[in-house]
Length: 410
View 1 (tube, helix red, strand yellow):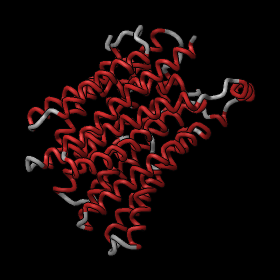
View 2 (view 1 turned 90 degrees about the vertical axis):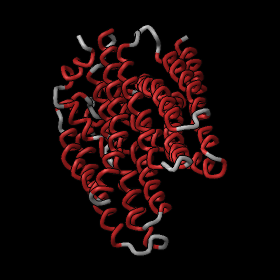
View 3 (view 1 turned 45 degrees about the horizontal axis):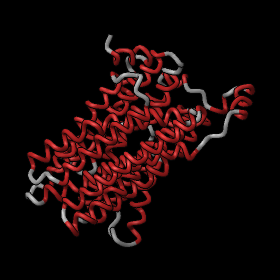
View 4 (view 1 turned 30 degrees about the horizontal axis):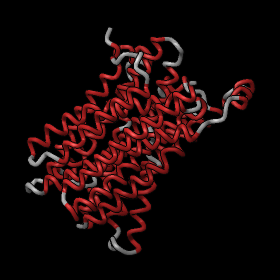
């Protein structure tokens, strides 16, 4: 039997398409805000500030939404965040056309809207992972395989949406009007997120406020959460985001040397597609290989292959390098999420999953800013050193996690 055919059996046939479409707006908001503000203000700096505000808001707001979902349930938090997020999207679209002073006090209006839009974006991907963990709970070999399969699918879905989202924004903004991508994101948020919120799978996750007295007493007597242990995979996701942000930004500088800066999105999409395909393969890996060893192997391969970014000096070689480099990227992401599920306390699974997701967002902003500055001063080859450094950081963190978990087991 195809491993992935188990997923509709666990969650129902409608869960996969609903969960996939409902997460698309998250991939559209950052680039959508930047594209809109660049179009109306004529300034790349203003667009960059708006996109950065969305990213910062998302990185800070995601763990808060995850914590609220753990305590009060996913359904009310998702429904409320979908409604509020739609209002902030509308605020940004309207204010971007009404503001006339994009460098003075008027900037505070659209930057506030962008920040709050990012902070209230529903966290569909992380909360979907929490549901899979509940549905595939158990100590049997089949349960573990189901969870690996589900997490592989989720990482692939994330990769595809972050490839498709910017492409949709670019097409709609260039062919029709720059405000349309954000309006479409608002429509999807207002329709598909509620569908995800009320899907029957939400009943598999019991919020803390609904736990019985005996369960609360059991939680109180459980060992205290080791947040330093949780911090390692979170830092791993920050490193992963730094790799993404640095690579994507430096590709603009790389393409610019050939008079084709606009090809950066296409180049980056090649890595995203191979990464997504490789993420699916994790479901078929041998269960005897521990998560710690998987992280070390995948990140070591990623670190070694990332050095090829420093050698590619033309578009075709770069396409080949990015395609090959994407192969260890997907498995690394899947493995870090899997380790996060192991070290996270059951009662705060949503909090940890959203922390992991927000780590990617924060890292992307960090990588983009570092590599952008370096590329402008020293060229694209120097910019790619940030990508290589982020991959090496992943290897170091994987080694630390291996040692820590081994000592903990002993």
